[in-house]
Image 1: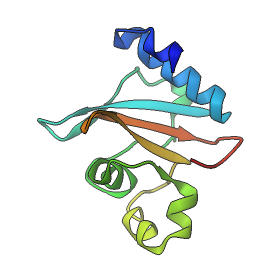
Image 2 (image 1 turned 135 degrees about the vertical axis):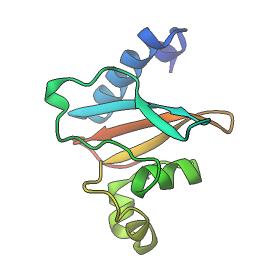
Image 3 (image 1 turned 90 degrees about the horizontal axis):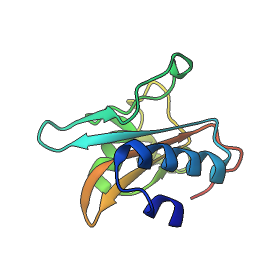
Image 4 (image 1 turned 90 degrees about the vertical axis):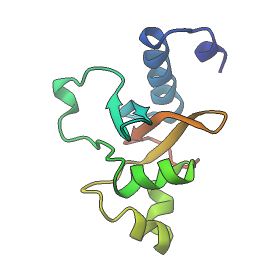
Length: 123
């Protein structure tokens, strides 16, 4: 939290968030998508790299991303697999990531944090 709080602009904040998530969860992959409430769209905060091909890209109109945006809660693959209601809500995804978390300021949605291929699972 202290490391993230020292950054005031997105150019340094997003890489710090991603490094922190990868380190804390032992993730192979993590991404931040910024929410545009006017258009109801998400855009990746950092330019995609060639090694990112094939990874989960959230679609705010269906599946995991839609559920997280509507409910403002973290959704893990573990929860989606073990809960029939969540499994049905996320069935529209071609593939599901290990976890998607809303990025919030108060109750305002700023974006989504996607974590995939973690060494450890859990909230």
